[in-house]
Image 1 (cartoon, rainbow, N blue to C red):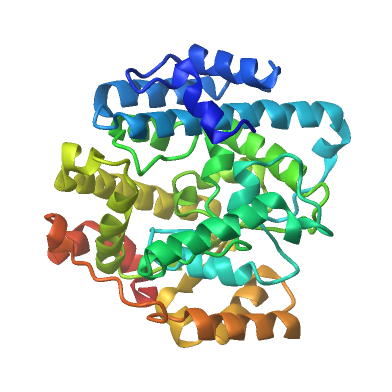
Image 2 (image 1 turned 180 degrees about the vertical axis):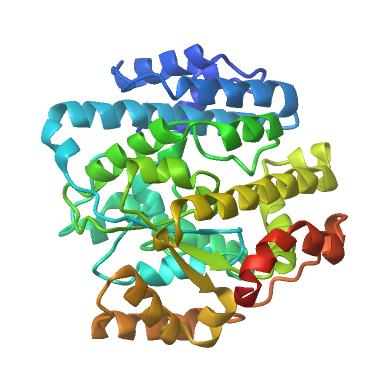
Length: 397
């Protein structure tokens, strides 16, 4: 991957305008010397994202625009490299991805805590942020502790927490835990981009056919597990709930660990969290309440889709986890989850999980304060809008 400094120097990353998809693709090919993107299904998502940015995202300007474009270019470069690796390793496409476990739910319902603690089980293979941001060369189990990508991630996390001691109250940063697969899906331009003002893109994304994106997702996991077993993945992303059926078409033996929390608390927390990750100046330009309304409608639509898809697919695909239950009885909850997933609950994992819970239980890193009224939503409105969900799962909230 080209250095960040070099990325900032490329003409296509000019902060003056949003380029066309062909310009970004040409730049990625020029910088890597590669031309095979492995099919062009992803271009629709790239075009949709750029169109949304050019009409709705002009609040993202200057250094923020360069950062967004740099991320897009890096993902295109990575896509080219993944395809080149597969061309050199054709047998990898036959490698099994066995029953991936995919943690999902509304954001701020315990998806991170659940994913992080399950990542401690040596039977499972977590998808770390550092390897998906720069997947080549594939990590090697015997040497990954000293992998420069991992060491750089440790340093970044330490610096972030040092600069902002409250960061851990909002999100648990663990270098070795599974992380949201934004970079993997981003190589297919099929991430949801909730930290950008692109509601038109998200409207397209909610209804798009995600099967090609998850087929590429599978190719990336095959690459990453080639030198680093096991092949039973623990994955985490709240937005899996939008596309359960497309995911199952690619991963027919997937299991979804569905996390639950009172939606009033979950949405209030997410509103206050997501705006912290917008590019500099964008929140002020777009407006806090406008962003909240867009995200609210997006997540409401996603949960409606999730509940309907669960009924069509059948409950055998799902394991439910209450955030309250996990907090009150972590080991008992994990023992039940392992049983429903058909995984042995080993003494080694139990010891790791106990230590993790003691260090990371609710409130261990401080308190995240938030309220729905802060962004113009009443608790009563959220309760009414999400009644279809709480009527079905309220006992878990």
